[in-house]
Length: 266
Image (tube, rainbow, N blue to C red; front, side, top):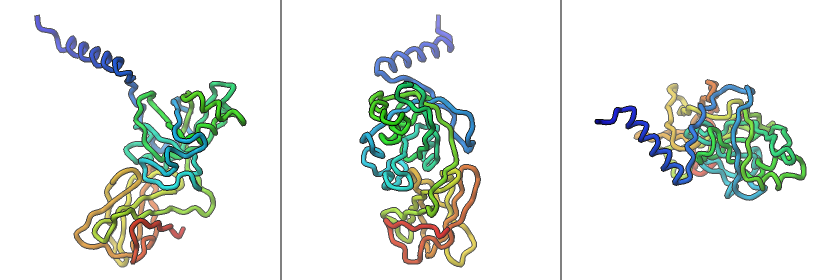
């Protein structure tokens, strides 16, 4: 007698589970994407750490978002990789979270610390997974217990999304990526206050009225390929996850250069 479709599906599910166990890979479905809801209830997650004990990551130089020098202000090494619902294919880059741990009680302070999402991590250990820098992981500890907490390797934490607030004087910064030219422009956008992340980027040529949309490239990098050379200075308009739009007038100068940072005037 032929097996029913439900029997076939059950057999396939059992086989997948057995293969997962055989390879030591737990199948944990990710949680829903973290959208622009702030200071809400604390959610459960797991955290690990990587790199140097007091470092900002394996090379202290960013990751899948494309940020540089994340060990320096304003990130100051308080960074984290986020899994799928946190990283969101790069749209989570720059978002800010409060995290804290209560157990083990002899090491955890229970006090929240702020971290910035600067990298991606797809290790399937929990619905929400923060793979923290060594510095950020240790910051959840009681004073003097940082190294002992890091010695745990993995701890359960609570987290919630919060607004990003940067020190006075920190302005939105645009890095024109290597390889850019008048017919190809790639921009990395960072230090966006409020929502922290960016979901759309447009540029406007001097004296023109239309805004030209850029496409998502990777991480926090947006790009445009155009048959007609772009003429600077260029204004940049970005849209955040919460729908906020902001313009940086003439931020990319007429004679801009690749691999160069340009800071918004305000």
